[in-house]
Image: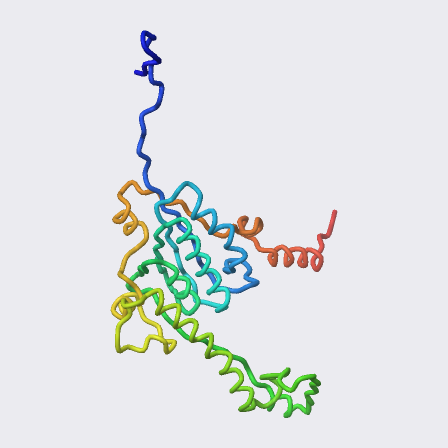
Length: 276
C-alpha cells in the first residue's frame, strides 16, 4: 500500500510483481561458402550485417551462439564477418559460443575464432588454416589445335597466370607474395583468439584438418558438445533459443529457384501446348 500524505487515504499499489523471464540466447546460422557476391546459402559481410546487429540487440540476449557449417571462401569476407561479430560482442558485452556442425574449415574456422569458445561434434572437420590458389593450364592444348593466344597489356604484370600461356616462375613468385600475407593474417587471428589453448610444439598452420576430437587435443576447439544441451548447461534448462539466419528468396521457400523458373519458362516455350 502507498501512503499519499499525512492523514490521507491509502492508495493500493497497482504495480505487478517482477516476474523473472527465462534467459534468451540468440543463435546465428552461418552455413555456406563465404564470398562478397554470395548467392543462395552463401555468406558475406554486407548480407550478414543487419542480421548480426539484430541478433546481438533484440530481446536483450544473455549470449550469442554461432551455428557454423562452412568450408570457407573469401579471406577478406571471413575477416570482415569475424571482426563484426567481435565488435558487437564487445559493444553489448555478450559472450559468444561457436558450435561446429559438419565443417569449419579455412574461412569457416576463421568465423569460429570470433567466438569465446568453440564446440564441435566428434566427427566435425576443423582447421585448414592456409591459403590456396588453383587453376588450369591449357597452353599445350591450344598449341596442339593450332590456336594462337594474343594478349596485349600496358604493364608487364597485367596478364599474370594466364591459363593459355605456359606458367612462368615470375608469376608463381608473385602469387606466393600475395598469398603469404593472407596466411600470416590467418595465423595471427587464430593465435590471438585461441592464445595459450593452442598445443605447443604442433604446427597447426599447414592447412591440415582435424576431426572434432582431434581439434580439442590440439586446442582448436574447447570440447565436444552439441548446441542445445550445452546452452542448457550454461544458461539453465529454461533457456530460450532465438534463431537468426539469412532469409531465403521467395521462390526458394516454395521449393524453387530462379533457375528453376527460367527452365520452366524455357520448357513451356520449347514445348507449347497443343491447344484445343
